Length: 103
Image (cartoon, rainbow, N blue to C red; front, top):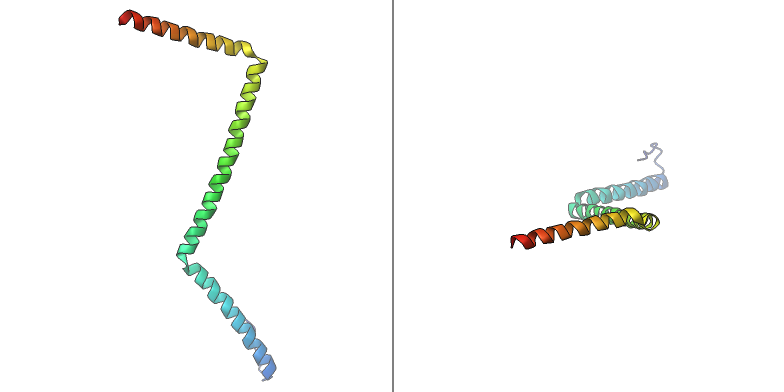
């Protein structure tokens, strides 16, 4: 805030009053915004939602990239995957045969 120098100039006093009113208006608006808890909570919720969406998008992109990379590796080196698939098939056959003998 500005203070008058005590000169008594009416125009200077009017300017000082206008300045003080503007500052008071800004202060009242700032206090009203702080007092509006509902709006502050809503704003916080919007920010949190946006952060979650952003992170979900980043995670999705990371997973897609990893799946693509794994697919590329499998295509370049198919032998280990064929061995794993054959082992899984053999295990399934053993389980089915064992169940067939019990029942």
